[in-house]
Length: 564
Image (cartoon, rainbow, N blue to C red; front, side, top):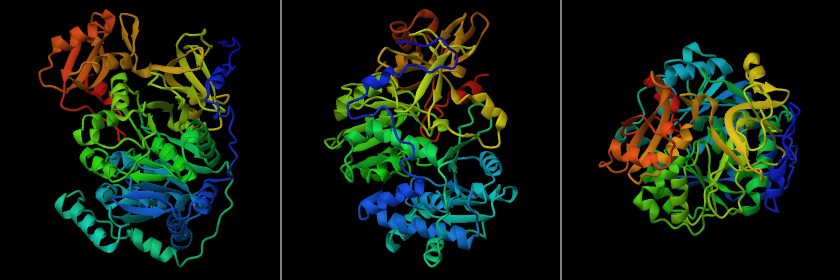
């Protein structure tokens, strides 16, 4: 592979030669003028097909069109909001989410996705930073909003309950069970809140004015996880999202059947991964999302999957691992499954091998960032087994690998990954200094250390900030974790660096046992077979569970904080 010496110059796109024949080297980022135009086209092609299903209740493309139009009309006429206003969405995977999502976009307003599991402090920051005028929230989390709404710019609260999009009897049962039996709806007091069902009822009688939406207009303020401090809002335009949609479609579209796919959507749609790969891609393809509101309830999730002939699934390593350890899941029919996409965190070899052995399908690991809408790399669908890499850069994407001084690294050597393409964000919301630090001359700095082979396959070594320095040697947590989870008695593991008088830092591993008989000595003996001596953990801590993000990503940052 030729890597130019000139600073700032992209790698030659050798990966285009490894694309499957049906994958183009370039995409047209201007295929649609806006995200509402994408929905309109899908409605024309697939009006009576289900776009989303939740607990057996379908929402067709025609219904999504009608209801999102009513929602948009209410925002315009009922709340008197203006184009460009920010609207927060704080909901899990329920039918109300896509209705509100496309309603906001159709009104020319900006979606601010909010994690329903946020604490009051986190919610206060995001509402204040985004300047959200309104919020759409599920009653289960309204008690959190109650604590901060008076200190926020929010003027309007639209409230829904989990079962509100179901027919009357089912609605009463679901809402009753949630509130009185499962007790998952803490008491709250939001007297001025407007019911979601009332919004749709009144919106149907209101006029809707289709605004002029430019491709460069802001569509999403998608907040990062705050791994380096307070979360920042990545400004994603309509063109950013549509370009990434075309890149995802180029990468996976050739194996998807128009109007014939059912995607298991356990990852939350408010997360950028599922928002793109599940929601927008499958809307464009006329596919259906099987919405799983609570992916932590594996038993209920598997029961839902049993009722449908699913053709695709996306997830993170921890979700795939949890499914593989569920006996009911192992008895499902996988004959229709032909796309399994992993992202959000590294897929471990042991999990990938078990998945392929059970389902007959290999996991296609991808890589992305919120700042890239998110897809950057993906494994080609013609692979026969798990590659261990994050795949090839998607069409119309340039990359560079640089050292600490910003110079291109020699071929085959690891370096920090820089990205350039139409999917790269416009910047961070109201943070010019952070934008200038991350975006330079069109190149986005990722903070991820990778290598690139002769065919263009990218392998992520680790995040720069997670690297452990042992006696001057770099130790990458992913490598340690991958070795540890190969032990048949290990369920999950996370590695961090802790202070050491002898070596500066030492490797500490946190382990969730699959079998109680596992001992520290047994585990370390296993590690010595796969790791150089300085990489073998010095400290082992067994835990019942590991801290995870809303999508199931193990939070090394929290473990580091606990071990200062």
